[in-house]
Length: 434
Ligand code: AMP
Image (cartoon, rainbow, N blue to C red; front, side):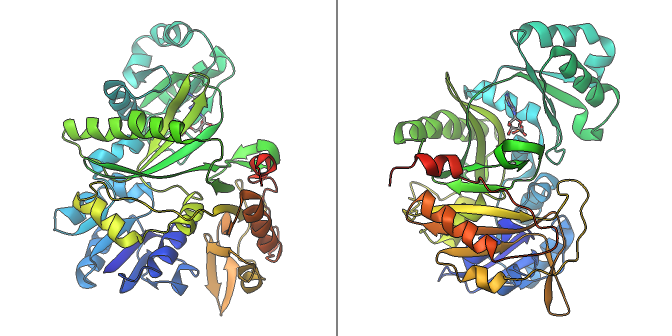
């Protein structure tokens, strides 16, 4: 099979790395890829959102299966563009990708499917312009008068969510979205929902339009600093499996969340194919969905791909073709931890172009894998080229061992201004029985 991975971050490096080790894969192509991906795949200089050029690659290179990493090309319709020309694609249509691309759409599907989620109300610009008071009354009354979360409806690069501590703060966020246009088209509607409490987990599954096959759970670390200090980022680390998610909870999430969602979408005539990634909060009243994503997570993929024992190409192709049936997904029993090495200043302004040393020494640590995210090659040297630079993963017999190895490998890497969290998987590894 000839496969194309669309994207060029740590997630896509992990996908390309795993696909390159699948005996049924003859060649891995990547667009645009990065210097790490270039060790596993033939990289083509085409941006992940350049749909016509991506379709041209698939046709010119006889690609059998396209695996789409980021959400933007899916929301723009890459799935439709390929499928309508008869090409297999692992990733949903634009209509189904609205599950991530529109929080109001996702809420509506969940509501009609009976999927447990936070109570919410959706408002448009004209609701706000016509009647501020009605929106504010909803904030106060419909949600129980407690603290609220305000979410811009569309894709806002992770910046469209405010967890407000007071009604006033929530009202100001609604005004920023609907009145002051802070998020452009992404903020033409807002979802206001009750604030939930509890640990957050990510559930990943494959869907083929009708059937759902759960993959695994992971937890990621979104804040830049230890103990969740500082601003939100794309993700500073992750680990899998989650010792506190037992079989009963995992089954409840599979049936009450993942299957209900996919079945509802099938009945609505919007079949969902690809990865279904549910962000959940484990509340005292049971698991509730915070959001859906229509693709793999970054950096969660950097702990999922190393754990995947099943060969991925046939699995992804079966999901693309609607033939998942009851295919079983096999995982290694090992745990995996990934630590993101970021540029100084990230997620704020940061400088790039610094030489990275120690990449080979890091990869020599037992169980370690170094995935590239924001890197570039200059005169044969690998330099920093983004906020999140590398994702250093390690497998181990326990989370404690995986964590020790990931940090040992990270300590061998250096570049000017490098920062990382030192507490990825620390709390859970401390509680693990060995
Ligand atoms: P989302 O993009 O919807 O996942 O929101 C981003 C982050 O905001 C989540 O990872 C949570 O930490 C937080 N969040 C979102 N919705 C809620 C909620 N209803 N209650 C508490 N925190 C939330």
